[in-house]
Image (cartoon, rainbow, N blue to C red):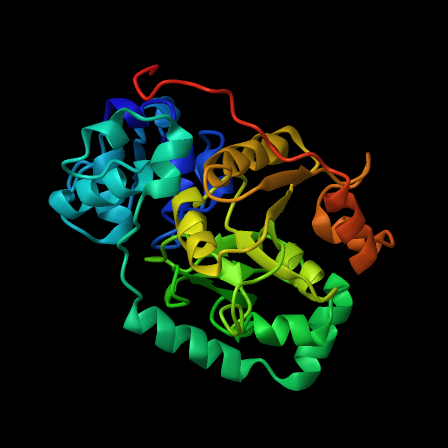
Length: 331
């Protein structure tokens, strides 16, 4: 738990909780039960991971609010032992490996193995949502997002009538569905189906063929679709710097020549890109691409006119990310 202190917002986001539900303290709809004005993170949520919902997670429920482990139990519907194992995997702490537990965060995450199993329920739900997404709706979504229809099809975009939102499956390192991201087409609000685990966005043919050439990493499903529209190999992470250990598993499987992490333009995006580059640099040459000033993310860059050659040349001209040399026992 000491290693998680101060990092709980990133950990809970990685578990599938919407990032916007963890900012501020005013009551808002619960991301799990949906009740209005019932949910709020506690004032020290970043330190302890404590949140509450006056309907489904309060002093009269089991588990009861108090710390991040209880929050993980409630959100993921698991017992305390499973929550502890999930947290250990998320932090890259492998049982019996003292050197890994003492290593730098980059070393831990690059060598961690995430053991969340694909969910049959979420797999079936994602398939049903995909089937509900009619071809002319895909055309409208592609035009609205300025991406290709083919890219959305490859990401298995769907439509949730219940939530009135587009859906994107979040995947584990083998392509199994471990969560579903939702996106409101009117407001661009993003959240996840309750019970989701944060996972990666990538095309259903990502693992076809042999060793891949350069792989691009970006944030979120729509940025992923934007780079897929250019014909690039791309993997999307669920949030800035999120799911680094899961991403490392995919990169080990793909064995690309190098990786280019496309940062979002804000401070959180840049910091997240640096964390991902730090994780991947021990596996493969990794570069960080920053969109031109004034552009918020990879999709905005493409909308502004960047084509396949623009991204390739930008990566070719960007130096490989270097980690400072350090001992495994510096922490």
